[in-house]
Length: 294
Ligand code: ARG
Ligand code: MN
Ligand code: MN
Ligand code: MN
Image (cartoon, rainbow, N blue to C red):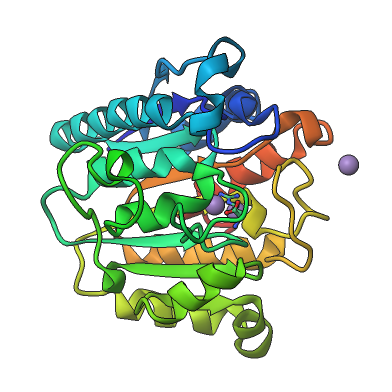
């Protein structure tokens, strides 16, 4: 029973400084020890090479697309290696752009599903984006839309079908992104759905929809949680998932027995209070990998 921690200190998919420090924050919050306690053999392979934005001056107007492509290729290969070696990768971001590589890498063979926890859809294309930030295009790229450099990371073409993905925690979409998502066939649970129906009902329904898959990847963008509870994120949106709701979601995911890999992204320690966001992320990862209260 092996878990492999893979650091991806990429901050090129967005503009705030600090999200590249996420892997360190998760290590200092004790991710490795917490998972070892659960009985896993945990291996931390350190950080993958990521260019530092301060020395990429000329790429700025390209929104760092060449470097993000390169990083995602490396992440993809790390994901493939983990899967073929039979260990479960946890990708420690970094911003959400790295999920193009991580999810691509873990979805090669078996029928796979993704639960994407986020305030945002990350479903922009170069045409629909208002910011130009590539972290807001990650899900679209995985579905085969947008920059070919991103769509073709690792292997050519789309890595997921719309029916493979469930979004949970949505509350902030750009106007064109909203229209695109409506027409996409992706199942999305918004904050309204969570408020009306409760997280338990949503988590069980989501897993029911994905039941015919053999692998589940959880892509946890910490900005899906409420910024009052996790202040250390760059793209905050008020009114998010509570810590308790997120815990319950992770516990129900653990019960499914499907979880094989995870991203923990968008932690920005510079904006945080005493590493609280990474500590909460560690507790959520522990629950997803089977920790129980009693
Ligand atoms: N929709 C906005 C954009 O395209 C925000 C994206 C936020 N994404 C994230 N991974 N935090 O820039
Ligand atoms: Mn995101
Ligand atoms: Mn987000
Ligand atoms: Mn603050």
